[in-house]
Amino acid sequence: MEPRDALYRFLFENTAVRGEIVQLDNTWRAVLERHDYPPAVRRILGELMAAAALLSATLKFSGALVMQVQSNGPVRLLVVECSADLGMRATAKWDGEIPDTATLTDLVGDGHFAITLDPGEGKKPYQGIVALEGGNIAAVLENYMRRSEQLDTRLILAADDWTASGMLLQKLPGVTEHDLDAWNRIDHLGATLKAEELLGLPVYALLRRLFGEETVRLFDPSPVCFRCSCSAERVGAMLRMMGRDEVLAVLAEKSEMEVRCEFCNQVYRYDAIDAGQLFATDIPTPAGATRH
Ligand SMILES: [Zn+2]
Image (cartoon, rainbow, N blue to C red; front, side):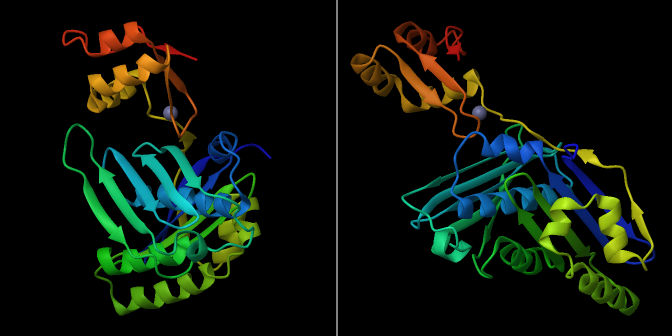
């Protein structure tokens, strides 16, 4: 099958219900090939990735949507970022052996889940705190959308070793009884979607199978890709935040300092000359930093 990596938006004609489907092939594999995630972590990270693309596409903003879970459980960190033009990156950190059957609650049950909208350009980010209630990523985010955005939302998410996919159905606010009936009917149909259909079927076939009796208007898809926003400039800024003394202390022990991007594995190397340039006030970027 050709890689899909696309997000489709659709509307149900004459109702206040909208939907989206995302199917990530290369985007998801680009995440998987960079770290050897245990299967249970892979599943949750894939679901989170599909969810981030779906939610980001419901928003009107330029910048990045960041979903981040931090916990003291076996999985310490899950991060997924999606830019307004659907460039995505994701990573996870875990400790020890993770059983294949571990659930979201087992892995990050005590965790802190935040959704951040970073408008970029130095503007203030908006952050929402998500209660980790519901047992899986879809239920957790449905609860969040209902509580914080007052939007009835149905999410169906699935991930395997090749594809991460999701479908979102949403009732727009301020609806009539006619719209409520339509929502109940469409939500009911949507809930019958199986993981293997979501992962494997082309979008047209999927919509026909679920909503054959409805009038669906499908819009042109938007491409999604893996893209890491790390750069020598950003790493340099981070090292400047660490401070000259700290950086020089590391370089006193080793001739070279390595900074590895957790998302894409890109390595940025700094030696004493690079560090000197980094902390020279008139040279803002580490021109001598080499990429490997
Ligand atoms: Zn990177």
